[in-house]
Length: 208
Image (tube, rainbow, N blue to C red; front, side, top):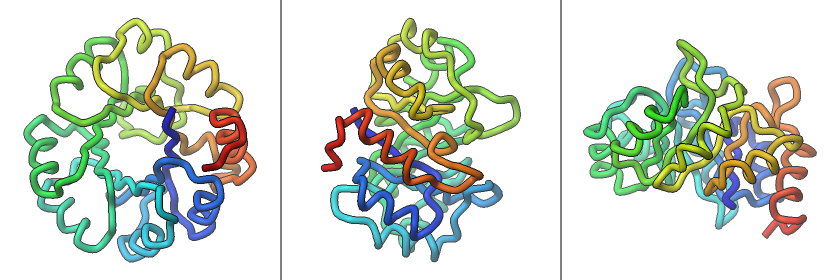
């Protein structure tokens, strides 16, 4: 099962990732969010990661042209779309960047998942729904709803995942991967001990 640590903002966060070696580290690159990272900082963070850790750039309702321009400044391996992007935007981003495109979905019901599967993304990020918010709320998604919907494409489970509930969540939904942000923070800052606990629970202590 793949592991993604999202909301990476500080060099210390990257140092944690370099020690623990999650599969992915995510950075918020659209403006106006609590965990938004300036592009110059994002470039330094991305360039500081060890090989084998893929950098995910998270964008909210950015155009393919805007995302491609960011990519000229920040090394990225995956583009994650976190707004109300259409299938046309998904294909446009893939065409302009040449990178895999993931689409986040705030799951209200199974129909939301079915609609997302038609967007042509390489993978989905399924998270809890909070009216008026694009994500990163720490609200737990309905695991049973996802299990019953049985998404047909690879997906990451996100939203409210913590060291205390991730094993149960993963067993319930049979996910491709798990995505953490607020659940690996203490006081809004990434917490190494929580991150290490996640790695130990999922990989049995093997950081490699």
